[in-house]
Length: 117
Image (cartoon, rainbow, N blue to C red; front, side, top):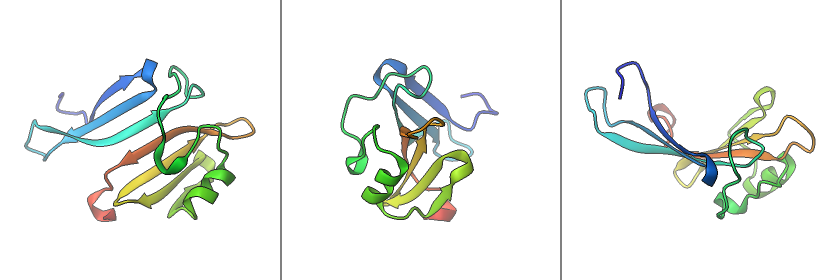
């Protein structure tokens, strides 16, 4: 991994899935999986992930429906169309489409940053 990069990504556009790896430590070249992104075809360049999504979410869900399934987020960023929850010891983030009905476009499940655990 190049010295200035903070992560390595494997994007499978046809499967609607991205895997994100980060170095185990600052001095290590060993990478560990830290995040998985599930994409819909509303995320440019990706096909819709065909499998089940976390917590029964559906890409047809609007923000209101996602909130009904997950409860209040621990962090909401309406200007970025993004919500974040603590979920099963991980962080689950949703991003919504710009155009109405503002359905889910990307769901990210990741290891929380050390200061957020």
